[in-house]
Length: 195
Image (tube, rainbow, N blue to C red):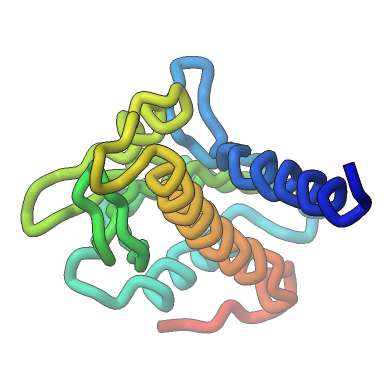
């Protein structure tokens, strides 16, 4: 085997392995997609201001009529809301092409910390629900076999792209929340901007 053939084979193998790896989304013990974390802050961040900060973040970032507050409990420091983002690539086999993905976000606040939980992801394709969790589990366990028109390798590549975009959208959402919650104006002694 000459050097050119060896290098071509090596790079082809690396490319195949990289493309074969599946996107790993966070799953609960019950195999449900859920992004959740407790974020520790210092004690100067009081729960009342964190609550206002979280609510302001939601209002500033979800201006559409489809984004709605579901429940508010300022006494216990919890609210939940529904929002959406768009996945802009095609999901062959499940019908999602540039479709909205709806989700629930729950935020709990206490002095010096908060917890976010992003879950209950449902896509929408021309008014039909697409259950993201079921489709993701099918993808993880090679449930999509492809067809004559769309072979399995191409299908898996498209699914990798979809779930990479999905994961990026959720992580950008979480990053914007974290920035808003750590804002200096949320500390004791500083005014919280009012709406």
